[in-house]
Amino acid sequence: MTHDHPGAPRPVVLVVEDEALTIMDLSDVLDAAGFEALQSASAERALSLLTGREDIVALITDVELSGKTDGFELARAAAQMRPGLPIVVVSGRSKPDPDRMPPQARFVARPCRGDDILDELRTLMTG
Image 1 (tube, rainbow, N blue to C red):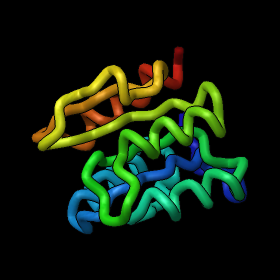
Image 2 (spheres, rainbow, N blue to C red):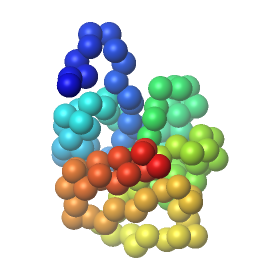
Image 3 (cartoon, one colour):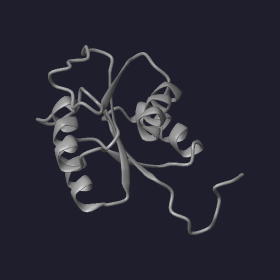
Image 4 (cartoon, rainbow, N blue to C red):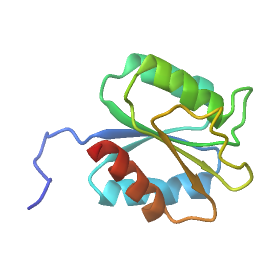
């Protein structure tokens, strides 16, 4: 079964990460899984994308971001804006902080593969 219907929109996953190699790797994994990766290097831009686009079905964010807002804050803000939005928070330096994570978010520690992040995302999306 293929998902290559011309014109059929693919579900959009917002990927917030300021490391170019990481975001490319993750975009490839999402692409192969049938998603469209919408990239953002900052939390501020990510929030404006979330505000403006109804087609975003999930958020993947790194904790360490350039700009004033980190991934935990972004996840919380996104969860308030879009209750029920599947959110995966990824970090190589921070520990998961339940107090700073929205209830529906999952934490993935680096080093991890894009597939690990995708697995968490799928778990959240299937509820």
